[in-house]
Length: 254
Length: 329
Image 1 (spheres, each protein chain N blue to C red):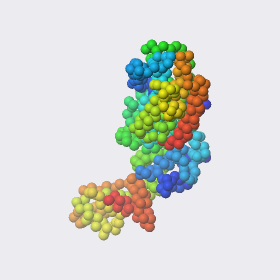
Image 2 (spheres, rainbow over the protein chains, first blue to last red):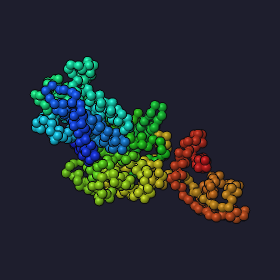
Image 3 (cartoon, rainbow over the protein chains, first blue to last red):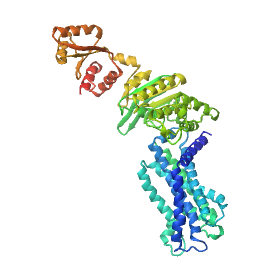
Image 4 (cartoon, each protein chain N blue to C red):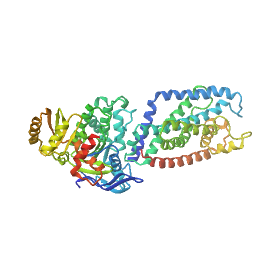
């Protein structure tokens, strides 16, 4: 009970902080606008995806990208907390490091999920053809993807002392995961270099994007893997990340 | 169990360097226990171990009867901590910060509203409770942190340098709170500070710490008494000559020249003062002022820490002249 209450408290704090940051919510509309309108118009004119429009193909990818970027960005909250001393208050509280990690992870995941929903609504507003009710099916998938990605951000942040270093490392992780995930272009099939096909198999986000396409595009999309395989791989990835995260938080002194 | 905190040869070593060296102290229930020492003396390290933030290298300690290593979770539940550095979320309101703390320390939901209201009243922040912390002044934040440390009604409150960086007025304000808090909440307070006046005003007992060890532990009045004798501070038109005269005719050995005063330590200042004036008159020296001063904690502090810095062949007896030499440097 104590632990659950601790988790809830830390979750609530992250969500409150996120919602109060209005600038970030507004900015979160601009990124998908650039990708789904500008990038899709130019890039889509030169690339052909069998069976569907490029914008349709891109849409689940951009949801995945939003989850990834927000999740990684939220890791910064750990560094802020270290910098401004609040981490001490949490670390000396009578709750386990596992609960501290889970509380923060759930809070940041909620924030990332809210960003993902914003993109979803945005896609609907600009007239991308999909059934809006798929949001209900997509949400659990999005959440599952987010857990692991947020954990990566938190783990890295727990090892890093300064905001500058975190920014640099974040880019190193964000971009390869994004490019190899198949969000912008297919990473399997004819003409794709062998190394990229392999690298893409190592990218957890690739399974997330494939799962989101399966859920959102339905029969228009031919998945790389069946949905249950994608879900199982993401879930295993999440569990591993949570275990590493708990360990990383346990060794945090300050 | 009358001791709230007991440590036995508590040690924290970083390679060869011992930040805390074989510390054995007892803190009584309901007292304000001051840990006084220069920066780097080991005060914060000691407190960090007692708060279970750091694990001791050797030795043991109990807080509220709980072992700090084996029962760290129970220790944490029964203590409140106000850190040296700020540790509050400035994007939440005062009330939200308190509520979060109440939740983390599992204060029963049915009483937490009332408890938070009490605390806000205690630290006089009721009217600012729903403002974001970033709009608070330094002193207000500090007050909220002290209040926060009390929400779960801890048995022991650790205050690590509670007034560092605050203006004199705010310091005074916070000192008053700490006194009141102790009286109202039956809480034991462990205070670390490098301000003499702070330790003197607040503490029931003071442990002076340097190089990771307790140098002396006593009540403030007793500590002052250990510096036997009074200080007579003289300002004359020729302090140097007067000093020589006092040595020759009255046999004073404990003298030292300050910038424009001469400070003499004697067993009984009241009876000596007329003799000094007399002697000066006979030798055509003019005394501008002569003041009797009781030793303060600063003298005690220099006495003990100064003594430990010197080679250990000369002991307490020459402690005072050690202060003087240090002061002149």
